[in-house]
Length: 228
Image 1: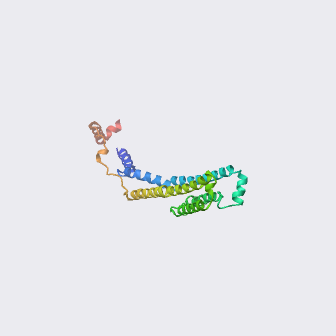
Image 2: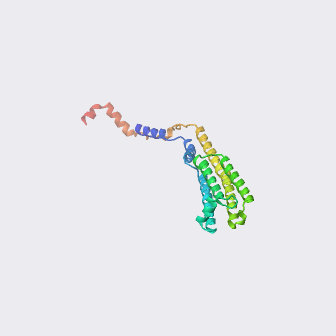
Image 3: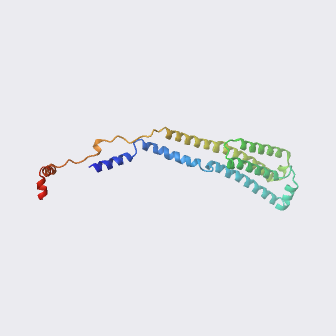
């Protein structure tokens, strides 16, 4: 009986109290957000960086198509790069895409900035340059690419700004606040010890009357035990 009582008491003491089950979801969610914090880059920020890369590749592809359409890539490269003319060359629009890519990847992928000043600089510079080029240059007289490259470059710059300002930064701030609130909630939960033991949990059957009588007889008549 004593061994059963001690084993039951040990199992009771090693068990968790009633309030420990309530803290388990908080701990699990906190661990998941802590794992997210340890990641190199968030999912929304990775999507933004992929779109910045798409911006560079798309402008590069359009510029290569324009070079091939207007007389061959090698000949047009010499004309637009070696003999650069601000009023007729598309090479500066390609350089503008390279500038956006290098600045934004360095700021938001390498340095992991959480501010909008870098995207503000690239968007403002892109818009100012493209507006001035469209007004002063002769791109509009060079066919469809004279319209296509400036407009697409302008639109992509503003899509990048929208993605960062309305998706990346708010989502990361929301995740950080949620993670902090969960961690604060888990810290406020008091540690609960084991609950009180009830007498009804441990039951030992009463000894039979016959066994107790035999034991008393053995104690009072030791000679009978020796003879047996």
